[in-house]
Image 1 (cartoon, rainbow, N blue to C red):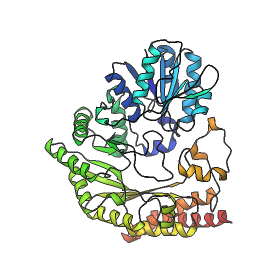
Image 2 (cartoon, helix red, strand yellow; image 1 turned 90 degrees about the horizontal axis):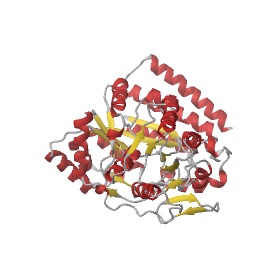
Image 3 (cartoon, rainbow, N blue to C red; image 1 turned 120 degrees about the horizontal axis):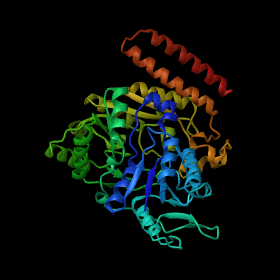
Image 4 (cartoon, one colour; image 1 turned 120 degrees about the vertical axis):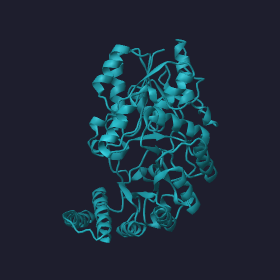
Length: 461
């Protein structure tokens, strides 16, 4: 069987990412590739990140793969549909398989728009069993392959039994990074930031219940690779690619204090030194945990806050206090690790007073970095279910993404978009004044701040 894997993200189409230029290899796809290799199934990966659609279409036309498997998320959906449609024209006999976080709650739509099979949830075993089934050229359909969805010959949607999640993810091979040109990522980082970075995953699933967060692939679980296996992967990455830093993509890197301690021991025993950043939660951090992170080589930790208003944090079901977040941001910086945090504006029920509390929170905690987004609902999340009846947009599903969905809020979306600018400028001005930095940039920030406040007042009416 000729199996071609791709993911449909083209950095040349993303003006914002071209400015930021912090691309990471498609880890999920490389896990699938490595697993298929482990099972003796030859496959190729078309890494779309630094390529273009014309090159992908040319490879499909020339190779005419038996299976084209595409990873889909809410950012790449429109491209994925175009790739599936074009593949049907260039290679009509190719079976199109889709997987990833966006497919689980949009199964029928994806099947109506070119997909032959949908892989629901964790993909390695499902993909392998589907490839095995299709290689037999049977006239039947794969009803016995768990974790699939497809349309039968009577036009009926079929969902097979749910795929049981892997209990021992140590059995998974290291992602097949050799399948793509990793040095393109290294070079992009190096040329734009002076330091390169690669991503590593140590766990699957998240045991927490934040209402806006999607758990469509790995579920609300916690499964982790052994520290020793992670160290082996880090050592291989260093020997092959020598990145300057590592980004651990795990939802909560410090969720297990026992695992973290064993990870530090494994690094020291193997004499592996690594510089990394990660994400955590304030309630899974303390002075001792931060000290362990420092020993392990952590230079930056992102501590989720989302809001400075306890009312909004509780509405999100974050199960953490604003005071905890502030304390851990301050303690992280005190121990010599950079602290970053995430802020979300426009969550249901958020008022101007809540936004002012968020500004106060950022000034008091004083993180080194913070990012702000306007809340948007992802299908399949509790947030989506809560606002479903209050959706105000009516986009064509095949030509839009969940990011474009809007709903009735305390104020309209444009208010919150201006609020992003207001919060950013207000906090940045505070930081500059705290450092006694007087410059033309400060003057421009003040103008931006005033403009944002005026526009917020305008859109509030």
